[in-house]
Image (cartoon, rainbow, N blue to C red; front, top):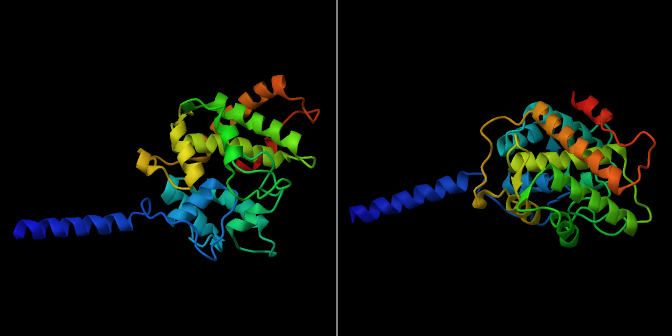
Length: 263
């Protein structure tokens, strides 16, 4: 009897601990909740690192949520919040909701890795066909080269299908930054490589891939680290672009404005 009671208590304690662990507290959006075009922010809301409703996200909410979920330092969160709050149609707002991010050509952009263009359909909803094209360029391990190849492929496909295709310098910068970020966050930020299965799991489920063995990094993900990895993606992008696409702008594609804000 004592042994049975011991095991009962142990199981109960384990259940409580699991319930209190936000990495295990995944719930998809409910009625009245909103989500947006960013798989990571949707994922953080699904885990409760951000408000589960996806609404009224303040700078503190974003900073705390990104730190607790993936160990982002405050500088990155403050930078991202500055862009995100600009999508709120309410003037001088101090918060944003995830669905605000779906405003076309503000932060949401054509040639998404996992969404269709706004001209074609719902740019804020995961699209398996778009993502299948993206991941077809990845091997078992995603790196700078294969990540960049998928970006250029999506640009080519979307430009051919969308007569109103456009991509601002900021949108282009975010595409490259998103790729540098998902590889670095889910994989090895030093070698800039990641297991393809981890990325597929997060994009398709909007859930952190802890069941596949992923863990939050014990070291901070800093602005300098992200900028360094973004620059490596940018260099590879420019290299591949020379042989696959004609440049639209005489000066090429640059991230100087974006990097200026980060610095």
